[in-house]
Length: 387
Image (cartoon, rainbow, N blue to C red; front, side, top):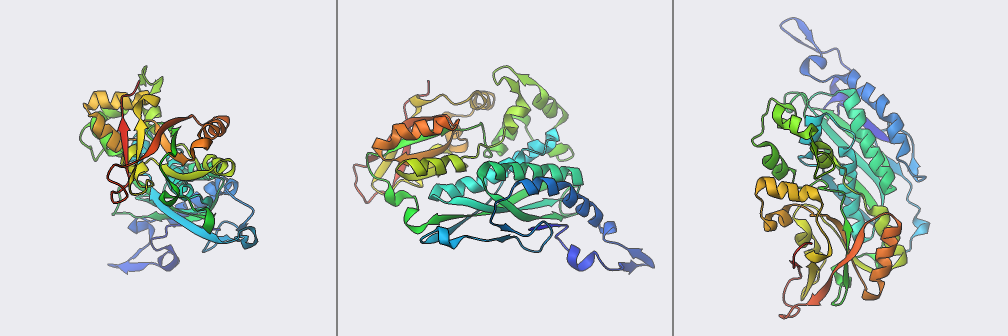
């Protein structure tokens, strides 16, 4: 299992005597890269990585590559699925609040819930953490969140890379990315090819904003970025994050940093018990744009707003920012984090299965033929008004 630190050059530069400038020996630390801090970070994260495993993982932390023994006898025609993503500017709020153990869950969610959309079971994930200065406790906290997300998704964290980029990134800056791999039978791939008129759209409730639209969130709540402040958020902004909002039932910061719900295992459970034709992961672009990606030409998914009320955090943002409904729906999930498109006879059973697993779910709409016929691209429309 690979887990390296200071990947921007540790292997070729850190072990030498150092170069000489004007008679003085110069070390890698003088250039801003602390190899010892990287080693400490790896030690601190070991306990977290060890929890996020599967029986197929081969080897232990510290190698050059992560090994995973795919049991090919388990499948008839296995296809490997892959996905890569990041967390985005939600990280700025984590930095402003000095809370770093939740964005790792967001990272895993963005990757594994894209995998499961095609019906794939997430198998393993590798992360990449780039930072301006490697602070071991903070890196370990981030990885703890990544490991927790992998546990929720049922996939293994087979390794990753932590790279220190002094001079390129600010001392407290960091960014996250990850790539995941899953497996699905070739004859069980889900997608628009299976969707047909009459299918039912089942919505699954989100845990909040998830990990999209935070550039607009920050613009609404905190105004211009202040580069010299943590996460670019002013002192007044950080005070607002710590303030309890009665409409939210918690502090503003806690509501905004609520981790993305991971649906992978729930979707796999639905596949096992019902005829599912497609899933849509509701991320950047909102419900209509993402649902349209799995709707075939000549049809439209019509979703009734009357079937749910968006959580209070969306109303707060719309009110304080004067954001139109159209812009809110084109930016945020509005309370729907995943959608299943299922055969009509299966819809109620799917809702029950999800409810039994603790996922709020409801019938939100149907797939209808477009008047223009098969020549038109598939679309998704939201109609009516929220309660």
